[in-house]
Every structure is written in structure tokens, then in C-alpha cells.
Length: 406
Image 1 (cartoon, rainbow, N blue to C red):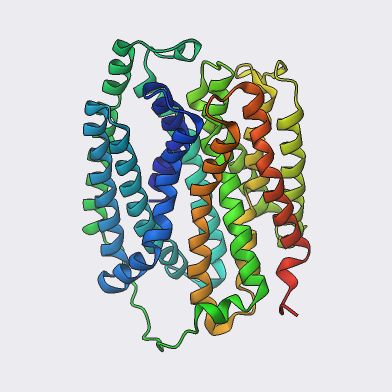
Image 2: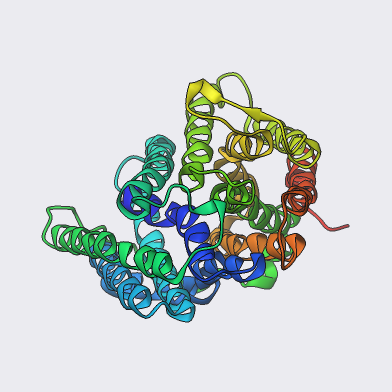
């Protein structure tokens, strides 16, 4: 399930520049592809929790995956009609399904075994999620891009646009069929249903929770983290497209590879050699350095990592942000919830809302690039990463320690 979540999520990194060409979208219009996907978290996080409480974890997971199947089918009429608004609707409904699945599967993984080993299970799920992000762009390129490896070099004819749109149909039909079969497998699988203990209705209020600075600042830090993660993972294809890079559709794989490396390093180093706070500080500093490298690198400079093909230096540095971003989620979460007591469930809900950062980060990046994005304006636009990493660094050094606003 975590692999499927990652596969569908990080498919956006290839879908965004693909649709950008088919519909000749501006940077701002292209950012709506990601905005519509991630804003659904804000809309459906609380209703999803109510659904899971009513139907249970196992049924909730099956329902969510079935909804993902229906959402995948929506991409087919969108491609047939070549209507951008239909793709936005498909993205939004896929985001709703993802939110429902996240709401069910995350606590299920935690409660499925001993509490002391929950961190190991969650870390494994994170690696699976990001590994899917490595695979998804490669599969998309193989099945959808076909003979369009050089389309970035010039404007498309209507015949090319028609052919590109048609190429989406069979892969999404296959994706829907696979997800549908998986939903049935979950429904009739021997996975145990976990019974929740009856809890008091008094869990505290949002206002009480936000009176804790470490939580309030943690929500902001998580919002900004998701923003930089999505920018690095899902806009790198469009960034490469601005350079005329032929293999732009697989660029997300580079970012996700660095994230997997970061997860593995986190599992090895934390807390044996460094603390969560120190790891978060180092990650933020690395993000700041990489941001400056992206903005000020020579547009003509290239790098050939591991002999896998030449790419602009700025694009490679953006991919390396995956390494800086990898352990921010597992580091921010416990720091933000520390000392909340009965307010923990309310605080968790607020942190989940922080995923909406994935909607606004690319949107602001698109605005910063301008209507006619050039290589120079694209590089300069990534300067918006800088204040995000500055705040995360502040949270790592001081914000998480604050227990009073006075």
C-alpha cells in the first residue's frame, strides 16, 4: 500500500511537464496540477478520520484503494477530451483517495505490532514510498513517453498532442485494473482488524493545542517541509524541461533516490550517533547550501552522475535536495508532539493538515517563475526554498524547545 501511495504520488513529477507540453501551460497553470492534488488533504483530512472510525481500518483501506482505481479511470476521458479541467478534477479525487488511505494505513502500521518497534516499521514504509518514487517516472517514461523523448526541443503540432494524450489511456487503464484487484485483495485478505479502545470525547481543543509553541511552530515547519519536498520531487521535471533536457520525465527518480539514501542514513545514524534535532539542523543547512547552488550555478554547467547521463548542474542540485529533505518528516513529527499529553490526537490532526504545503509550494514557485519561464527565471524562482529551510533550521535549533509563548 505504501508503494502504491508513493507510485501514484510521485507520478506527478512526470505528469506535470507532460501536461505542460500537451496544453502549452504557463508555470502558474502547471502548478495547479500539484495544487489540486495536495489541497485535497486540507479538505478531507477530518472527514477521512471519521470514515475510518465508522468502517474500520481494513475496510477503510479497501475503500480508499477502490477510490484510487476510480480516480485513475478519470484520466482516460480527460486524455480523450484533452480538457485540462478534467485532469485537475482527476488529480483532486486522487488526492482525496490518497488522504483516506493515509489516514487508515499510517496508524494501522503503528498499531499492528509492538509500540517499541513502530519506528522501524514506519521507516520501512518510508523507504517503500520513496522507492516507488524512483520507479514511477521510469515506468511513465517507458509506457507513456514512447517516441517523445525529444519533444522538449520545440512546440508540438496538434497531431503530436493527440498522440501524447492517447498514450496516457492504456497505462492508466492498466493502473486502474491493478489497483482494483489490490482493493479486492485487501478486502478479502487475512489482515486483522484492529479494535480501537473507547476513548473519552474530551481530547482538548485546537486552541489549547496551539498554545504549545513546539506544536504550532512544528505545524509551520511541516508545512514548509512538504512544500520543499514536493518542489524538489515534482517540479524537477519541468525545471529540466526548461533546459531542453530530453529525459526530463525521469528526473523525479533522481530526487527520490537521494531521499531513499537519506532514509537509510537516518535509520543507521539516529539516535546511535546523532540526535533527531541535530539531524534536522544538518538537513536544513544542507538545504540552504543546495538552494544557493541552484540559484547561482552557471546555466551552462553540467554534471554526469555515475555515468547515467549529462544534466544541468542546477537540476542535479535540486535532485540532491531529496537528501536534505529525507529525514525531516520523522524528525519534526515527534518534536512537535512532545509533551502534548491528551492533546496529542488534536496535534496529530493539525500536523496532517501541514501536508497542504505540497499545494502551495509549487504554486508560489510557478508565480515566481512568471508566465514565460526561462532558464534564468526558473533558477531564480527556486530561491523561495531558502526561507523555508531557514525556518526549519530555527525550529531544529530553538522552536521545538519552546514550551511557552512568553
